[in-house]
Length: 131
Image (cartoon, rainbow, N blue to C red; front, side, top):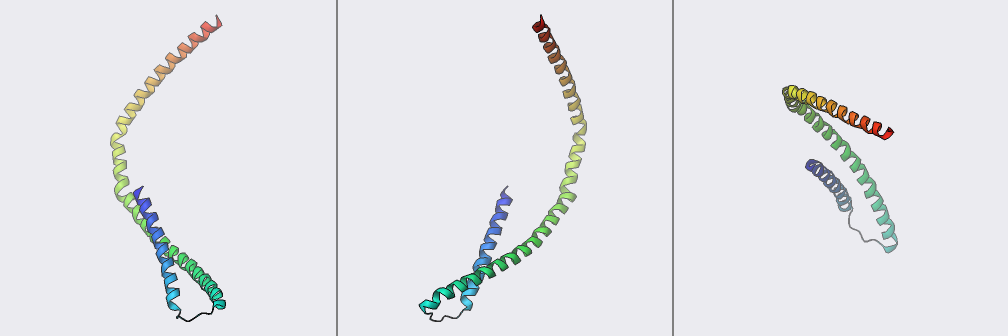
């Protein structure tokens, strides 16, 4: 549960950082020039559009790179699981198998006895109802 929260936090922070990086690079790349009020709004709109478009492209590239890393991490985790954890779980189940079978048979016998008792009680109740 915790690692999912950490993973989400890392993803969100990397996306925010990549967007801020693009925005900062775009703003710093433009030389400071006095802008007339008429052109200021248009130029601001154009700058915002280009920053947004470039931000989306960088976001896509970042996700593609992250996907490659996540796939590698998944493969490593699955390899570790298959080599180390799964054999131990299977060994533990093999050790517990006779105990589980014994308990299962006992439960089965108890269930049969209870069902016979319940059925006989039901049958008796039905006979009494008919009389």
